[in-house]
Image 1 (cartoon, rainbow, N blue to C red):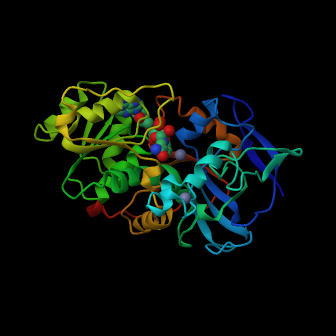
Image 2: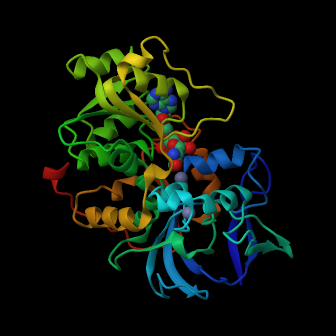
Image 3: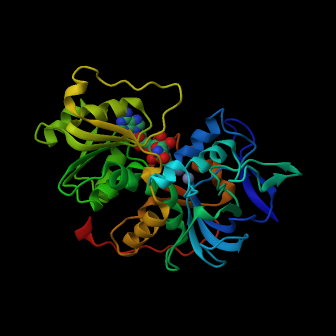
Length: 384
Ligand SMILES: NC(=O)c1ccc[n+]([C@@H]2O[C@H](COP(=O)([O-])OP(=O)(O)OC[C@H]3O[C@@H](n4cnc5c(N)ncnc54)[C@H](O)[C@@H]3O)[C@@H](O)[C@H]2O)c1
Ligand SMILES: [Zn+2]
Ligand SMILES: [Zn+2]
């Protein structure tokens, strides 16, 4: 079939709206009509990353409706509303069988090579193949994706909000709930209050943290963080952030620090702001040439754990429906994360907003193909 897509045609170049070809789904693949797709900072990273194979169709936060299923697909059927996960998993590799499905060995190769799981592409233009991105390529009217990327959601779930679950929401929520394993009454600092960090705040809130300290250098983002559950804010450009955080936490530092900034200076701050025995979870993606430096003195005495978290250690079939249910029950904020709804033709404006330091980036610009009526839930303030 022919469809409209935003194509990355060159390193650092604006995306081009083109007519491209999409082949039908093969075994274990699903054709999805994309209803909405969020523009993530990782898409901007991909445009600027020399290792991104192109021409490609980016986009890895999407939701839509199943149109057609290939052979062997048992998890979804035409008409189902789905949120897409960019980490499908095989269930049989060494990582899957030990519970780390977000690290599935079968998904990593195709993810970085720009294909689907069988090593080939369903996308082409003028007979020449286009690369997939994150096994999804949602900056297009339709996508052929692995069946394990399709997570069925309730019919009542609005799709713009659902599209955000698959990346920034799951990653941030999962960083707090799955990776840090925040416990009730504990203290948490989140560094980098963007589309991911704000959901780490929500995850920490839902896990029952007593103090949640939002840390960023953008006053507007810190202000917004309070609406999502931050109890305190620290502007990292206005003083020694670890010292300010220790002052809020009886001099000890937080139990958990979650770095969602993508900047190593924040990771060092996160380490220094964490108490003995605490846990630091790094979600931000660093540029490959960066080196992370942590204080060596006393390293052995403080018993801290620092870990990277890919996709918030998410298990999509467990976590996506749970987040959707929390949203429908008024306990998880998604409406406020849709900061603008744009057409596919306006996609480069959404990318530009990442460079605009005056543009609030707590949430996502969403490419809304269906122009569904805006639905906003009522929140129960007792949960927030
Ligand atoms: N681990 C994963 O699987 C995964 C998934 C999605 C995104 N990411 C990465 O997570 C990061 C966050 O993504 P996003 O979409 O929320 O980005 P974003 O640009 O919306 O937010 C990043 C925030 O960090 C703040 N910041 C920058 N330097 C800081 C510092 N030194 N201290 C505190 N705050 C600082 C910025 O002001 C900004 O508000 C990116 O690096 C992205 O590539 C990782
Ligand atoms: Zn993303
Ligand atoms: Zn696997």
